[in-house]
Image 1 (tube, rainbow, N blue to C red):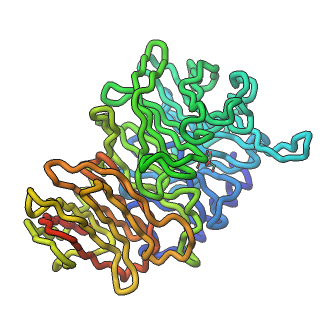
Image 2: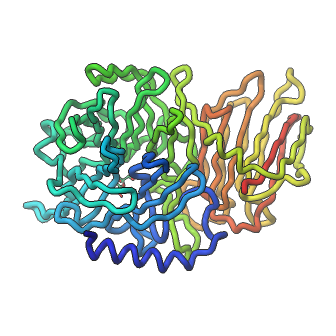
Image 3: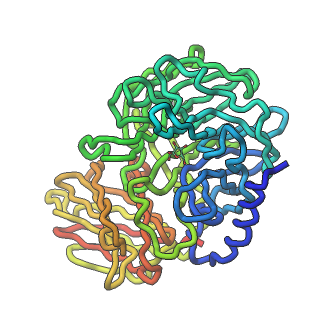
Length: 494
Ligand code: FRU
């Protein structure tokens, strides 16, 4: 039995979404059925299809009482909107169904685990969110909240952990058939920690240990954890709030963090080794991963950042996009990300130029577009003498452009969307250290109407940014101060 709140949301999204025309959305990045979308939730493979749920407020393009939106895909690139899966309609989640995850149960049911939010007035009059972990079970379309919710509450917290910051469970099943989940938490030091819980059946949970403590190193509260083994390492992904900058690795505000270390599956212990940002651009947060049937681990993030949500198109009927699905691997203690390889099947209209000399501003016939996949290799024309700067501009016309520029002497790549049409005083530029090999820099730039994702050196780094530039601005140009020789391969993505 679904509630009136859920039925209302389903009716609303079904009728209102018809007003959004095809060209008004990204083509192969998931956007909400209607209204507002934040974090990916419940990213899972179930009954032969990929399911993506998301933090959702259908009634407006701003954050509101959280529902779970739902979309389904066979290839992670073409998404079909399904009716909303969860609404804030139970006493323990009446103020929001916050982020969580999903898994297929051995009996074939789909289990969702999420954070229920209930506001409570404190003795001093302050109203705070009580956050608990809850379950819902379903068939891929309709979900029933579990009768014994919440399954984890304040009584399951270690000493000193806050009941107001206890959210975003990510569940997985171990090879022995038992279950684990990680949950973001705020300990006494006011920063973040990730708690590990275990269960025999997915329904009855107990506290296991603090998997990893922030200790005030990387921002404050750690949101949306994901934890998995990859290429022989343990990998923790999390999105810290309130970060301080550190060189060009971490930036002020909401950020992303990947911790790579040793994981002992016997004792569920994790020893930290390396730390890095997940994405080096502007708009990427709260990613979640899924394992494909062939074993690939694929990540999708919210292609937005809380600190930059004020940049949007006027009268846009939706807000928020998901990133491309990115295949993950760990090499030499670093997280690598590559666009899902099936994206290449969407390529058409190949245009290729080899050994193009660039020492000024140039444009190349046939190299333009706003739904494209473009590979560049950039090298100094003279191995003995470096150039000073290389730049590529895209989403360009007389008025607008977004630029990527590289200065080999500093080894810094910058993305700059200051001229993309934004009318807000927010961050529009970001710089990142990148590597060159024998002086060569490789870039793969993927545009999908309202975004740019830049994969550097076969996935060693990614820089992601949203752009709300009018679609007519589709020019691309190249520039060098000094002498560069460049290869360009460009495809349209259909
Ligand atoms: C992260 C987050 C989560 C929370 C959700 C609420 O973006 O703050 O911690 O569950 O958004 O929408």
